[in-house]
Length: 389
View 1 (spheres, rainbow, N blue to C red):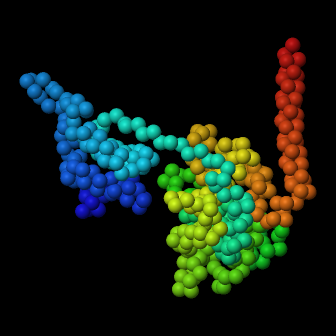
View 2 (cartoon, rainbow, N blue to C red):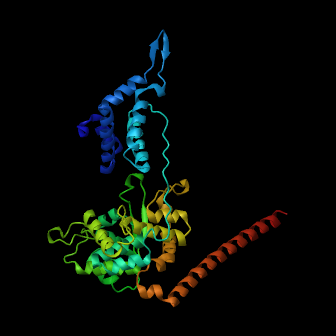
View 3 (cartoon, helix red, strand yellow):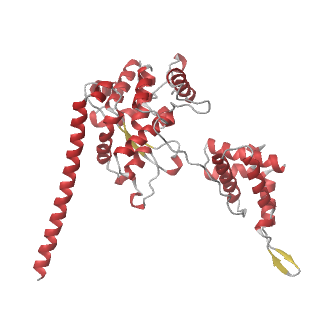
């Protein structure tokens, strides 16, 4: 059994592999067994034996990597994958193959380069604000709140499913002083615009140590509040979004339930935009909508990565403590207009012109401050030169 193989058990423990990653390793090991009829342990032992120096005619001889069995298996596995997988899957499986054998110090041949065609995102490929509005209008309150949170925060569906009521309290804490959700709801319901600040470790990239700091629009907050008011005996430790079934009242919403929500929306309202192989309206498409909107109107690449929960490559920002949440919020406020689903607000020309005017004024003010600071520095330099003379 693959699960009982000691080498697999070791790599699972040492790398603290996720269930998804363990599944990937098992799939590859099963496929390699299919083409070699050998266990992974036997293949590793044979490969390590082959790479040992041998003495032939009093000379130390090391077998060339191209003549070793592991190279033949590597290329054989590549041919096997080509007949069954698309380029991106081949690339991923070969990387996992190498990762496993590298773990046990097996020397491998050079990488096989896989050309993965890059798909361009064109207008109409992902939902726009009108598509999201259509989905929201035809959804019940819980589902509406989830869709709006996805579209206006960029959160992954897995992270939204894991949110608890206490996370909502913490995200809105600057608007109230309560630790109890029922008291917090009373205060928040009286405030016209509440923009929560969500700070969490994304489930998908937990091992990379990424942190996500993002926000959602005031109308999304209102929808969440309306949904929470409907629920009885609400407690801080409850999941923010729960199953509607009575017996699962306090359980978080399942991934299959989310899939069913999107499937129904696609079948009923987006059938013309979906294909047999791909649905048009899905959770990741809403994340792309948010990402595209933020990137279009906010050009700070570091801020883009933070709100999406991506890795910060810059060594200057190794610590997330250096992140200024107020600066992030300023950038987020620039795009609220483009994330707002309410028809009246979106079509209000006066509101749009005022918002755009405010943004321009802020930009001019920031530019003036920079110029003033530069002038102050120049004056100080001139004074120091005069003093020296």
